[in-house]
Length: 228
Image (cartoon, rainbow, N blue to C red; front, side, top):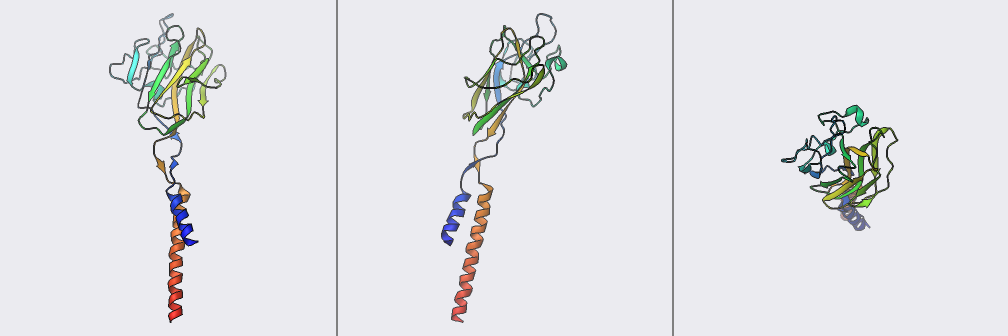
């Protein structure tokens, strides 16, 4: 009985369990730059913070590769684009126009990933100035069910239950016809590669070892009493 208890405690100690779910930040992402509002020669909706070598961050639709920028910088727009964007393209949104960049694709690269369960995308659904939430969002080429933020607001959509593995994943936005899609942040939630022992297993081990140690002391005292 005592041996079985100790074995169970030891066995439980070394059960491999996933780490607590946490945000997983990409090391790089590749996409095309946002565009400017050419019709009025005013605001620009570039990925101005993108830091890839040689990235043309002030050129409409330029290929951005080898770095990260506005989409993963942790700055989340809480208001609609017209409140935070500007001529210099330094606002938090990256904006793609349906006629210039139809269905923009973003390819994210990760260093160490166990699995990604949830993707949270912060975007604009103001329905103002031709900006609206996407008609469809594809994760690794698969269309996902989602509901855009309330019309006239900025908010986020949550795509859960994904169970994505591997170090490269894509997010694609399909715009409504003739509209812009504006995205300020893409967040990934899941577990990193590796594991941790279950906390209760350590408790079982301590109890088990204490039980065995106490049992040995009891047997020793009992033996001494018999031969006294």
